[in-house]
Length: 180
Picture 1 (cartoon, one colour):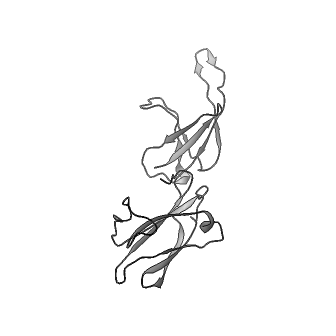
Picture 2 (cartoon, helix red, strand yellow):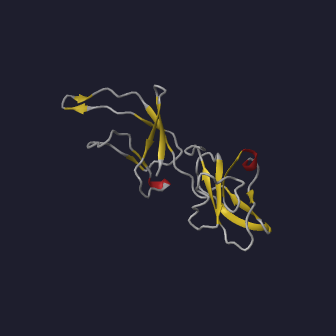
Picture 3 (cartoon, one colour):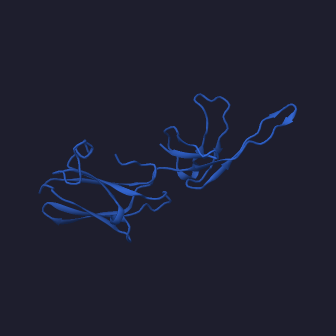
């Protein structure tokens, strides 16, 4: 899904979550509403990562009322996949992964989740005991100095077993992602 941080001028931040669907950046919309809102208004076609201001006023048979204070919102979204991913065998028990940041606007990339596993469903690498140094599978968050230079970024997955097929995946993480 997609998530937005809405900053109200009073200084209070509230996290909103959109429903699961196939939104893409060119057709995202922002909905600020209570549950089961029957008379909601929607702002469609908002570009992600662009600050927007909103205000409303009531209109009755007596005419329009005063405008509300402005509220601001910045639509965000989960980053696209890293680009130009490649793998190089560096020894009988390790490979080096290379990648570039997502090719589309994806917010500030804070790091990358790298996973590898001999199971194509990544069952082992998604377990609680998966780390950067697990034997035969792993789950590692790459950030800081490792991604501060010029791409391609790289990571060496080691402690692999010879003659075993491994699957690798990398996900870019922005401000919507929290490392446990």
